[in-house]
Image 1: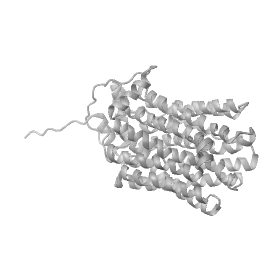
Image 2: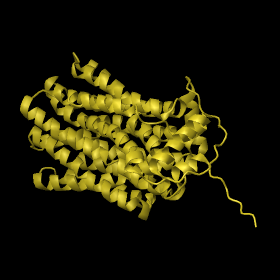
Image 3: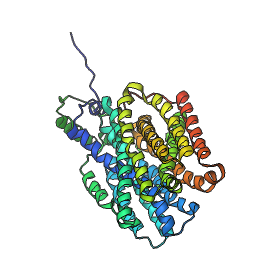
Image 4: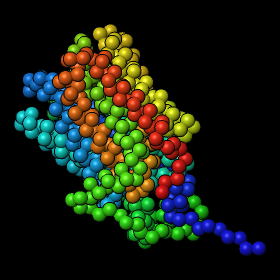
Length: 450
């Protein structure tokens, strides 16, 4: 009797490999370090706002541009680098983002005035904005399917590490040297070291297959099989698909493809990114200033914000444990609105130091259960040829909200409506987003990437 077996394709082989720390784990660590610098830089905006408000005598509205210029740069970088990664490859985009960030961070530290400072912060944000979409696309495509949810969720563990390091290191530098420029320069050298290490990461075989570079894809797959100790087996490589080419209109064409793929899914991805990250970025950008206004000393406000970020590491651990058991949608539906609610409570008790610190720690924990699951979820909603772009555009939309949201918050909402009502409005957007997701977006737990 003849037995017929189906020959798996190269993508299936990669996604069914055993997990090895020296192989996929190494890529996870290298990708995560870039993510750490993204967190460090975003958190630095909240540190710089009170410091530069004193240095250049800035009003709250002017000071808001410290965060806005950086985050709008990240927004443009997120969609640009996502599209670049889908056209020239994950590896090249993977290595370039931190180099651009490092260059303009140094220039920003030596800015002659506030306008040049905002210009350089915008450019640094543009470089760093590519880290999240490119890193998630690359790490996700190297990670075996059974571990992908936990690994992509654990990627966000680098965020509280970077945010906490920023707060603790900045608090020490301000207390010891009282120089805001050092808070920027201190992260440039490690960022350049990570850039150098990134050069050793192989190109994504899923990307190479889509581009028709079959020999290169086969070599990467064979090397992965050998390195993980998996049993070699025959596999097929599909014919090349129409891959996007980098051009002036490629970003627009990719955006159209993202919405044509499934407009309801894309609407869910954009709204979740916008609302949940708006809540988080509001806290990072303005919490030091809010705490200082409530009577905290500068370095204590920075340490409290750092602690809020640090406790988020526990949230990431909880998310990694639950993401494959509970599923992406249920976790987001619960933790998204709950994180916004705790921030409203912070606004009511901010004048009571012990209560404010306690509820900020609760907020830091809950929001960091939501965010890594959000990143995992959105990265799984799109096929390989749209994954970097789909994630990148969602990240772009969230960064625009995070950039202009704090500006509107400081100039209009907070002065007119008060702190608690302003946070509550952001929470309402989160609630609407999770309701849309519940009805119109699929669950992606254990889903095979295509």
